Image (cartoon, rainbow, N blue to C red):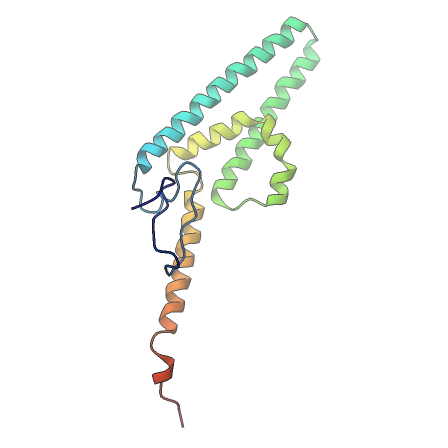
Length: 167
């Protein structure tokens, strides 16, 4: 049984680490259950549709620049800015799926990521084709936490009051 985010329901204070939920996926990524495949398809289609719509909006902006007749130099600068920012946003977003991003670096890149939103959407689309975006790094962290928990549990087995003391 799970809640609306796909987080496995367990009694309060249950032992062991709990998986961290992913955006749009909750914790369905752990066992690939509760509509995980459908969510991946939805995330891929949604991000691709958003990227296409975004490109259409950028095309209207480009046409506005042509109508305003501001000159080819400024038009080239605007197109280059969106292309470079989209490429950098793609790379930054793609890297954030494989390792935890540095919060300070993310804060400093917020403007670049906003301008290069098409790149972020495309990174989300391509990652959704193979896994839930961020699943690999979350799975590695979760499995490491489970291993630490199980290892710690095996060392503390038994009742310490009943242990024999060496004389």
